[in-house]
Length: 201
Image (cartoon, rainbow, N blue to C red; front, side):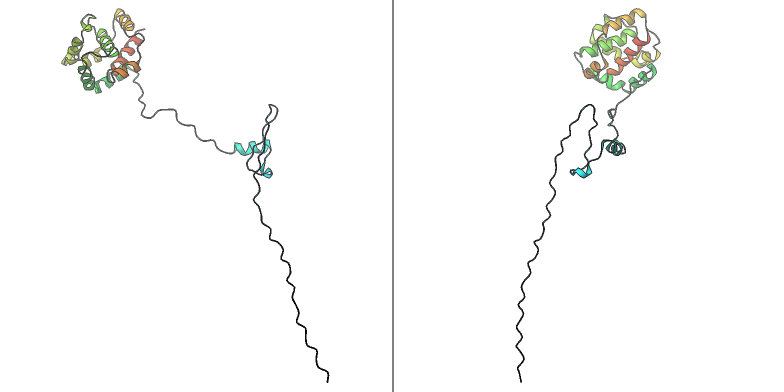
């Protein structure tokens, strides 16, 4: 009896594995755009060329993007200046005490303050020579009753043309900002003087 042949073990040859492909990130591309007066530049919305839109389509896309609201140019807490003599007098009445306290604090007031107070009392009928002395102006400010500043301002109607011309020469070149920087409270009286002079044209 013939013996069965011994099976030869099969040797497995390892297959070569395919090398793994490593995906490299696409390099960013720099695209140079030359703009001429006859051409509309293309708008680049991505770093890849496939995302470059034509000038017409890009303009349509950009038009659909809402523009940000413009920044406000109005300063906060800005007080609108009074427009009528009645409104100005009402404002002065509300700051009468600060005005008097400010004036009493001056031994030698700033020139815009002295000129403003001189202009006020000139329009109210006081003599120019009398108003040269600062202490005389303080006496007028301290008056009460019918002689008080607020009573005289509220009853004021129209100043003499000669006095108005004199006051205009006195305050020529002065601005509200000049008086405000020298004396904040007194600046309300300068507004009254300016209004009276302007209304007398």
